[in-house]
Image 1: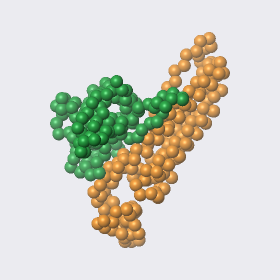
Image 2: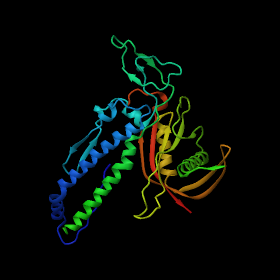
Image 3: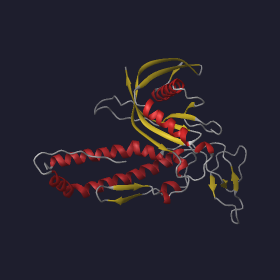
Image 4: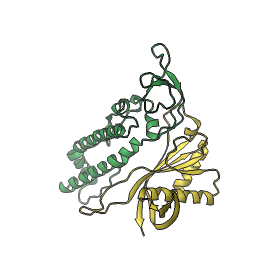
Length: 178
Length: 157
């Protein structure tokens, strides 16, 4: 997501004006955006917990979502949720769909799929070798419903917060009469 | 007799619109469904329309009026990559550019008995992306999916 701010200013040389703005508020603004990113992570984690089909969650997905400053050269680049750190199912939970085969694991304390046994939590082991003797191959009939935790965090929290910070930045620039 | 509330009216109005336009543009064999089906094996190709949530932003401080904004998702489940691209371009470039009619639906005995046009729906902040691009092994129905999200702003006549 890229936001561009257009600025016109009479009197002062534009390059000098941009340098002044940069000197005065660049770091403070960066800090505020980092704070917004941290809040977005907390928001996303809360959303996943609250929308879990069988709460409480294991916490694997939400706890692996973090924010990090990728670059602060010519702009601020902040990443939320590094894909390599997320469990493989992060995308199916967000977008919905059939769990990719093969699904090896167990229900509850080590049960195979049982007719009428709905409500037990699925534990994915991914293998059926020694130590996982209670693991079973499962073919889900129903698709996972999309949780949209990325889109909802973006639409409901992130974009309004960034707009708010940009408005604040604009009024600070005006106040300083640069 | 009952009436749909705004989110369902928006969903149903969009579904009606897409069904009509698919037919008039000679698309065949594409179903339009509400929401995200529990089991869609063998159902592709189809388009799923779903209202996600409801904003509650006030129009101005001190006002009890709120914006009639509904974030929606339009999800394409295509049978191949060409169809995914064609359908998403057709929706984005042709169909969702203009305002579409907003209807209020009346339900009698579980079926729509009456619909009346009471306003327009405008599509804001459209974003389109291919879904499930990072998951390696997918069933056939999940391989060619496109998600279009937009905020629908309802303006009453």
